Image 1 (spheres, rainbow over the protein chains, first blue to last red):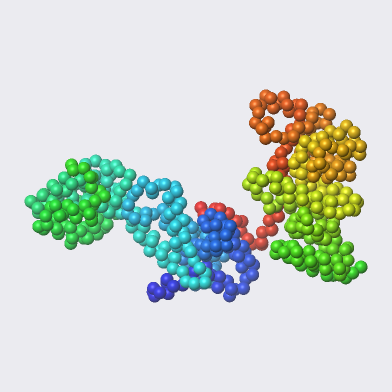
Image 2: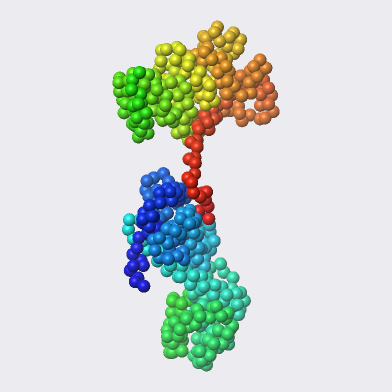
Length: 289
Length: 268
């Protein structure tokens, strides 16, 4: 498929309306027009500003985009006629609702692989929802729109983030030294901690560390030179299958970089600094213990 | 009779001019109609204006500016249009500056009723307005701005009859209108009084003007007084009542094939 033709297109709603123009069905057009006006008014009231022309104009673009997003995500043929039939069959309001549910689903997924106290704040949630709604669904019917592609990429990214967070949570729960309780989590760092400590070869799960255990780990690796793959395999046996690919991927990333240095001759002090700055800083306790 | 076939077109033109926010031009069109087809044609055009349009047009000629429409609109059409006078008020406005609203209402009604020297038309206007609930409330609003004086007149009328009373100690603006109403439409006058003083039982309790401080007094005292006095509604309350009576336009019948709307649920 040609990428440019996918991203640089008029909004799906416009394509459907062009097909409607061909059909010349005045009754359907009248109903659709009323529905679109009603939706625009509601969007203006809720998200932009229904007292200024600018606010209503913005709401109009959001309406076009949100309906277009729903059409783009529906499992239908890529023709104006098919999009029109879909729109008329369900009615503009239901189609808008579908689009808005896509946006809500997206907004509920994490933007980064980081858990924070603010994630459950209703105000923050509402703000994020509005921000992403405006980012993706603002479609000017007179020009091209790529919100559907942005949505597609974003949902893949965020699902991956969610997966990383789930993995981090699992590791914390099965931490060898007891469950890690902390409302904040840098899931990537937690995974890296686990992968690095797996090198010790005893198959223990470590999701959180401090400087002392890290020093011990470096000393242990330098003394005994445990086999990297054997240690990791032993560790992976304890991990549920859904997280294994993710951990394997992380292992391959680390193998060529920090693991190489762990097994090499880099000074422990330099190594500790690098680990703290670039890998596991947020999942390392500040106390020297 | 003149060529009446043009009248619907003129009505349409006036309507459009008024809705476009240009009452001066609408008035000009009315004047032209009067010159070409005579006053009766204008009466007919005005009588057929939609009431909200008539209201909009008339309210832009309150106070100093005279308008042919003010003089010629059929009383019934005016009474209908009065219902829409409060359409533009919002509740904050009523809360913040009831006096301003009451005054604009007074300017409008006074301009309409006393704009004409023809006593017969004046009586017709009053009767038409008092035949409606909103008209009664509108007059109640005006009178509530001078509640003490109205009570005085009401007691006089109750004791002496409408035609013998008339002199009051006050020169408040609404008094002439109150007397005019009491003389032309006694039943309407009573209805206005009941609108202001819903608890009034003539002969049993006395009228009492609403006052802000007293309403907060302790209840026992209040109850005792209630049996003695009929407490009045405040201007603000009456304005709110008037605002609530503005007819809302019936929703256009759903088009054939249209689905029931989801409303806010589209965000769910």
